[in-house]
Length: 89
Image (tube, rainbow, N blue to C red):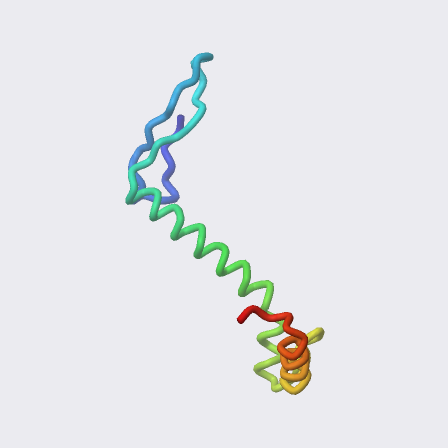
């Protein structure tokens, strides 16, 4: 199998081979696993920021993004939920 060069700090993994002689799993050391998770979280954060870009731009202009309620409407909704006992203690 090809060595991954996208993450040079990740060590070469070990492969678990099944009864049919084909790889069925990958074993990586803990540091490599933490690096992989960290990179995946970074990608997820970037994706969320890109998805929110138009809303953030509207907020920067002082506008309310489409679908967002006013603070007063949020407070009223929260108070109604508290009064109805719909929130955890």
